[in-house]
Length: 348
Image (cartoon, rainbow, N blue to C red; front, side):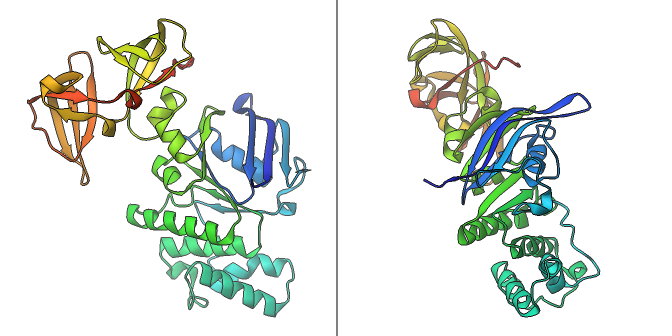
């Protein structure tokens, strides 16, 4: 197993009495692509800036390679950051932008030229050396910013919402490019985003944040299929989240009926949140459904239809490649392992 390259131990941070981070404990493995995911104000960028050395924690310690770097300034850490606003130098061409950090370190000219060539090849910008950065597209500028950061051979590359300024098509292309680069280089990427699709696409590990607290850490598959609470379920993909009662192990009541499920460890008759993903619900004839209702809306989403089914007790969101017409009475079918039971969120 890869070693723990970065460790945050009991990290808290407050700004003018407002807690941005609350007792964070997290380790990041060497060579891992880890994403800090959450809405604006959840603390993800503050955590990134503490790792980078741009912010000092109010309490706690930061370790890189086993060494306490809590009070080590940013320029002495083997960490580089790519920001959403790429911070390129408009008066320098592509080559000089990439070489900037190497020149500051007074690397000899021949080695700088070799490294710049390697980095531009890595980001597929060979032949752009003499171009003005202002003549580049947003995606190309982002590649130059990444090349400049990688030229300094950081142990860790920090990326703070670097795709936020790109259009949807280019953003999706760059998601795959970033993952390819990270795998090719084998270094640690720590990525900040509020976009759950980005997190699911690129990450080895996702850390879901809320109000300065880590809600869940796991692989994309774990986070999506086994959310720890209703907040995570709602933030990662679309979900049907319903109030329910866990009557006993493996049996839950919601929507006025009882259902077998695969969860256990709850107290008898405990109030719970029930999550069923829209793609896990099948539309069947009313007589074959576990529940039944009327189709209240149908929207074509390109790959699937998004339908609202009103059962009287609740309105269910269903994703299906088969269309049901508005106003039609249909059945809803799902399996016990499609029902995810979670304890009530104390902040609800």
